[in-house]
Image (tube, rainbow, N blue to C red; front, side, top):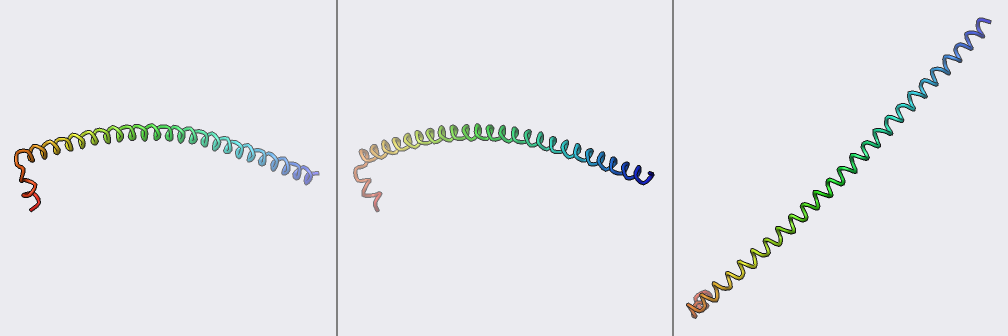
Amino acid sequence: MRTEFSRNRFHITTLVLLALGLVVALAGDAYQFAKSERLQRRLANVEVNTQRQISKINDSTAAMVDENQQRFEAIKTQLKDVTEANKRENPDSKVRAQR
């Protein structure tokens, strides 16, 4: 009888330990799932913020390009005016410039 009692006790202990192991494993799965969800949310926020920053950079770059284009046109106009004024004052300056 004692061996049967020991065997039953061993089986019960084994089942209890297996059940505890299962509970611990499921708790670990739940923890990892929650951690994964938080990471996905953070990654989505980073993506949105990155897109906003890229958009701001694109807007700034476009504004700078427009500003530089206007400067270039102003310099071009000034150079043209100076060249025309120089031609009027010195009609033979073209010959001197080519030498």
